[in-house]
Length: 428
Image (cartoon, rainbow, N blue to C red):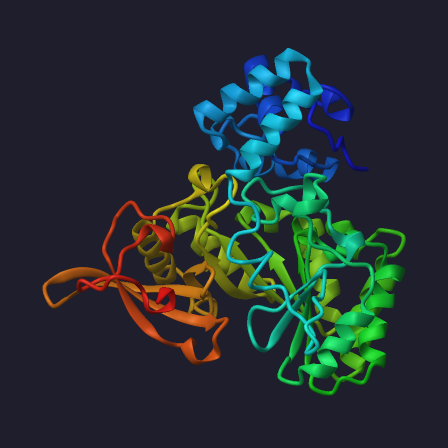
């Protein structure tokens, strides 16, 4: 049973929840203001099983419920005043303006990543940034069981068609894949593709499989369902059909991978999540895990080590530790790159080598995935040693480069090239 999907947090089933009602009225008011800008959604599994309502700093509460300082003081005051005015048009105008200043869809998602056919026709609802991978945004999957407040996909959930990436037709994607035999895998993303009914998801998957695209080797699904609604794989009335869908991919000779988002060990401690992982793995699908480093949630080496060790114990492969993207509430959740690197290194010292598969900290930026490899002194200058793990320009992949050390920098656009260079090579 899902709780309210609304900006007014004082109504619906949440209003009957003892833990929520124990919050100060001023805190609830602040949430109502912030929720006009950032989408809010939660369900009874999250509020009943993942949140410790007696802990004011509970990480899952901070992850899913709007927080006062996700907005600047100026923006908060503007939204609050518009909300109190009772003028809907004024409120909508202020909220739209605030959202537009929060860098929705960063890293060229609405421009550079949009593919086109050889005849120049644009392909909607699909992104193609890296040579070997395309992202598919099924319209019915552009929601989630609950919303993470850090999520860089927040524009998908605010109801503004101009900010939304989606399609309900997979045939153009299949035609595009026929034109691009360099592509190896298709990633269903959103939102969360597992929010869809299994029958609908399977129609998309079956269309891909029946197209006999031999160069497509794997089908991936980005999801938070293992955290926010593990019943999707265990007891929902179409959970068996969902698992059969995964099995069909493997029977077709392709690799099925779940790109699971786990941000804190508490999400893995719940028995329903562990049972869901077993069922997925019994299908032959692989689970890879990723998380951004988030202030007040997992910015602790012991927490990260516990997260990765538990993932390995449960049969998952730790994959990426991301820097919080330059969008939305980055200033609230973001951890400086220098601190992120120190936490990553310390956490790696606390895990077995099986957990050392995780790469980080990584910025998923406009030129590509940039790994912060280290901090060093070169030619008498303290620098960040950076590497493009993947790039929209294949020839750049693996390239090392250097930036001036800045202990406060959160993102690549806050760094300056080292050694007197005027610009990074990808900006020339």
